[in-house]
Structure formats: structure tokens, C-alpha cells
Length: 119
Image 1 (cartoon, rainbow, N blue to C red):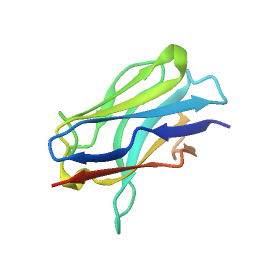
Image 2: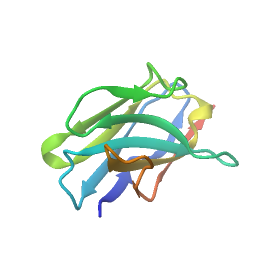
Image 3: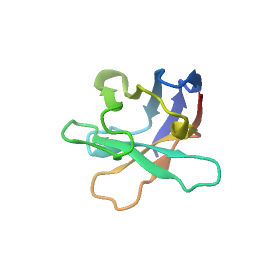
């Protein structure tokens, strides 16, 4: 089992920034892929960004490319999502997730953290 706990959400004005954190425990993560997802009211959960825990290529949804940055602090088992130039449409509950790199579906989820961007 992998346990994930998000933090760092809140209320921010348009154009502002937030940094989300995801504390990870339970397994050695070298074979895992890590990601951020979000779910806005009335919408399905959508992919935001992902990366391999051991490094490598990062992936972003087109809607956040150039504004959001996924990263991790390897020694502390913490993943981050730096969100800049926030827009009202970024308002959502943000979830961190993990899966074995060879798995199809994302396997483990945090409880989510609310991000609200006011105009």
C-alpha cells in the first residue's frame, strides 16, 4: 500500500500561485509513477501532470502546460505541484496519485485538497 496526503490548497486570486504538496509513505517508490489530477464541480476527474519517481520525462495536460510544474523531493518522499498564473478554471479538488510504472490504472489516491481561484 502507498499512502498519500495532500496539502497546500486554498483560496487565491486570478494570476496568483499555490504550491501543493503530497506526502508519500508505505513503499519504496523507485518503480512508481506519480501524478496530479483534479476534479471540478460537476466534471469528471482529469489528469494534470505526472512523472516517474526516479526521474525522467514529465507530462502535463495542455490546459496547464507552461503554468504548472511537477517535482519531487526524493529524500523526503514529497511530491509538489507548483501552480502559477492561476485561472478561475483551475478551481477544483486536486488529488495526488501513484501507480507502478507498469500498471495501467492509477492505483493509490490521496484525499484531495481544494483549490479555489477567485476572479
